[in-house]
Image (cartoon, rainbow, N blue to C red; front, side, top):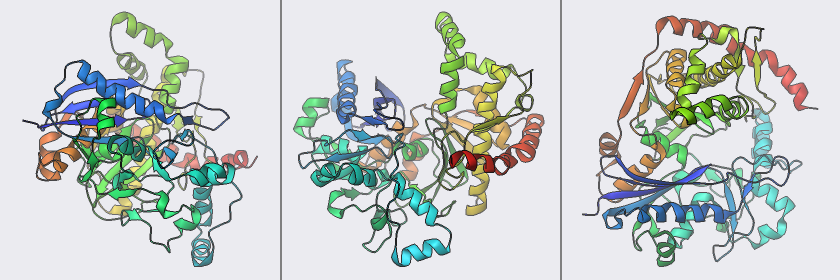
Length: 511
């Protein structure tokens, strides 16, 4: 009987093809590593779109090379990195390299949004935010700097839409993959009405955008050419899933608003799932959840775990070599660094704003570390990095609690950082809440499998699918004494850092 589910997860650094059963067990996985991007100038981050497609093909073919049973598959679902965009011709061929979500190009000097919308934004003090959104929009940069590309564009797609076309031959995409600078109505989860200000801010002709399909519904069927390239059986239904953060939240089982999902990955995020549209920060919308008619209220620390990777690259060679020699996970030895110093890192406090935000923190923000003394070591720095990220996400949780009136009572942590016991314990201590890791590391793939399971009828609804396919692994409880140390540092030092340092940040930003 065909009851297993194939999911394809196109992340920032790899593509993974996975087979799950209806109970949420990961039966098989094949991973293909990719270069996240290449850069031809400072701030640019692009990639050949064929890198993504070839990795999808190789990841899937690797499963069949291992003898995995194609006939067991009931459906396939796709989840991808968010906000990576492509210009496509009418045959589905890319017209230029994909612009990665990591790209930092900006388009200054654009005409501001005018009319009643412009007046309203000035009145509420949001004109600067709208101008920032305009400058960040990749479509505006392409129209300004490569008009010939824009004129030749048949469809302007996110990576999810590009791969969906390669798999089904249709220019369609999931509603829940629309996260980025396009005229999307996040409240209605549809393309904006014609009068909406976003068509002024990011002027894209509506016909350049794909047809949108709700989560759990059919995007199309695997075509014969896609079957030849990937080995996926032709005719297998491709079910609409969501972008990787949303499927991660679903795979962690966080469907109730009192369950917070922390992602310790390339971007560190806090997400809660609600059936009501709420903006925690004005003009920053909640994103579509991986379940229909629901929203993920998200606050992001852009490139959150980037500094963890930076530390390991610059200062962690010893641990990586020892791990290889001893046949253990490098995370175990980095956890030893955390345990080598006391909670609070002997007064060393870090603010993780190494990439700018939109409204909080502002675009002028920088990373900072204060409290250095001659007693501090690289172990202190490493622990302070983890603590700083947890402080920032606790601040996000407090904003969420205040806005939603639904306090977060429990946390689940996904992403690469979730593999560190030390990181999860200090997170529990800083938040003062139970912190659990899901039973599977591959939560984004599992979330996509849940979408496929409901869409193909293997489960009757999302509630039963989440009940049967998700569960928690190890849980970490806060230690009262350690929690008291963190409460003092958080309230008396961390929460005051941004306001104290902001004038210096602004001075640097303006130079």
